[in-house]
Image 1 (cartoon, rainbow, N blue to C red):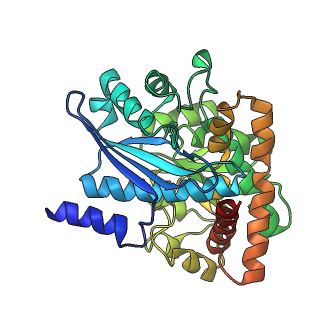
Image 2: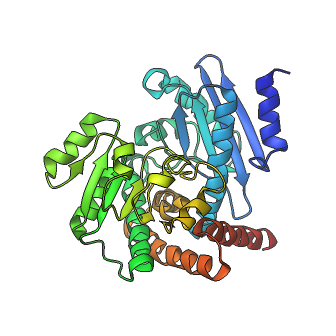
Length: 360
């Protein structure tokens, strides 16, 4: 075997990142599709999670990302109170260059071959229009357009859930859920970040933003001149007087370089897998920084796409997403009583619910 194969097999079967129920490697030569579908757990029901389309450096990196994301979805779905386990898929390639209708149809057939054990949706690099194509070959597809029987863009409720988690964080940290006058730094103002900025502006927060795309920043600052922009995330996390830091781009935002210089007292954002490695959650706690576990507060989107399977109702979903406020406070309370960081408390609660699901 090659070194890459050895590395992948080690990750699947012999590392702490493994332990998944099923991992499927997919290839369709005619369309160029190369994908990994990872099912972490179906203890609570069919695995549910999005499809990421990303130019990974190699196959091992793609497998590792799929495994981490699938595991995170198990925990997210458990704490969101959904009858779903966790799964995730990644398509290897540049979505701007490699995404074609043929490739998406081939991917849909691959998901359909699992017979409903995995329900897919949008993620980084995939959109509602893509799910409409995938759904032509796979009935276990969510995140479709309303015209095709779907709920549309899930980023609206994802942002709403993060906003609720942020209010809960403020309640725990300062004794008041109001964000009025709080200085909030948002890193990444894409699909979710821009909706989050809207919620924060409506409540009267002071907002600082950054994004690698200058056009995205310009659209916000031209519409809302009261919003301040800084050149990059390095500048954002060092902003004086920052109350809350909201990572809303890719994962790994909380790492050995960023945590020591972070000025915010609270971290609550939409990005998945914000903790770069185990132990970072303790570093945050040691600095007195309250961390709202990412998979808890960004569950609004998965609440929406799960509801799509039963006939989508936006008001019903928004009511469920509003409960993220209560779940976040429950986790902070458990963290305090158990003497552990909130990330550990969230994991314990999710694992408890999955274990109860297996026994049911």
